[in-house]
Image (cartoon, rainbow, N blue to C red):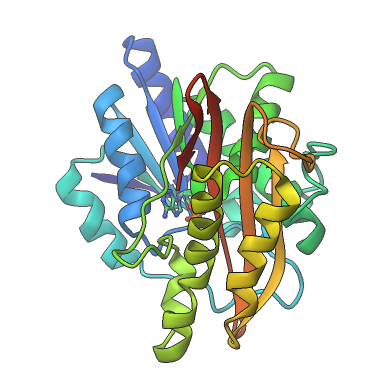
Length: 290
Ligand code: AMP
């Protein structure tokens, strides 16, 4: 695995692979890698060579008072996890390489960016869209891999790629969970003891809604109430939102139809966690994917 630190060299390496007719795969991350990230890398390796993974803790997607400074950085460990998978390139630029002095251009995906995560974290998706557009322009991959764990982010990236006519196909991969259901996240490292236990409330809330759907419930408010009841029962958990939205528009729905997402965000102590579940209408009813 070759570690690349500069935009120029990353562009040159990716351009050479493309001109050899190779299928370039790309997995953007902020590091502190876990099985969720590695599942994206494995998906990329099944379809592409070379595979480029990036590790960049993107300052522009963190708000004031958020955890940019304390976000886990474990570069040596991350390299040791990627090496045995035979990843070809690890792109790990300094912040000044992507945001040199005088940087002043940002990308805004309107509408989709203002709801849910965007409402709780103003400017977050502007930072995400900007850095992902830059990375996609640098690597110009055939396929780029994102996790459904960050469903709104994946939707926003898909919209940006369509709107800006980028030549990359966005692949959205399943959520990888701990054995007790907690969605894997680099931020889970902040959770200790009772907080770690309480954090499963997000998964349990979604699972409660799943049981309701499987019993025939289609009313979104009732499903939201089922999720809230589980979250409210946990004293260490403070709910930010629990909603059911259309998977394309991210607008709230009254009744389940077509493809919806149930989404939850909550603080466990001072750690903010998110999770979601996919609800797809089929001829036999709703297929629920946690
Ligand atoms: P991050 O490093 O948190 O920015 O995440 C990098 C990529 O990994 C994003 O596309 C995430 O959606 C994805 N990801 C993070 N956690 C998980 C998970 N538990 N399962 C699947 N994908 C994940």
